[in-house]
Image 1 (tube, rainbow, N blue to C red):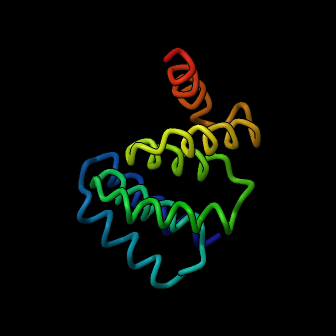
Image 2 (image 1 turned 90 degrees about the horizontal axis):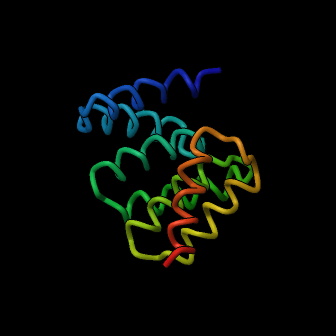
Image 3 (image 1 turned 45 degrees about the vertical axis):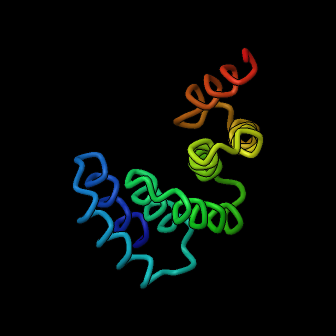
Length: 120
């Protein structure tokens, strides 16, 4: 499949800290495949790590609309909502991610965040 091959370098570059290069690659992929939720997620993740939370929120929201069964998209949306101070929406997004797959890659972190809010 072509889409994962396009988005994977973006995640490597985000992890390595080269956000400018990651943005360029993700933006090119998004231009070529504007309706691919995985690419929206990659570009949103670059914006998230650049602290451009409004842009990230827009992309994650669209990605969730296009692929509502993907728990990682809901998780990324929830993280962004948290950064914007919308804890209620974030809790809903994280709970949805766990509902879809209680063992997805970031499930433990999602549970920790929800538990932290419940302790307050």
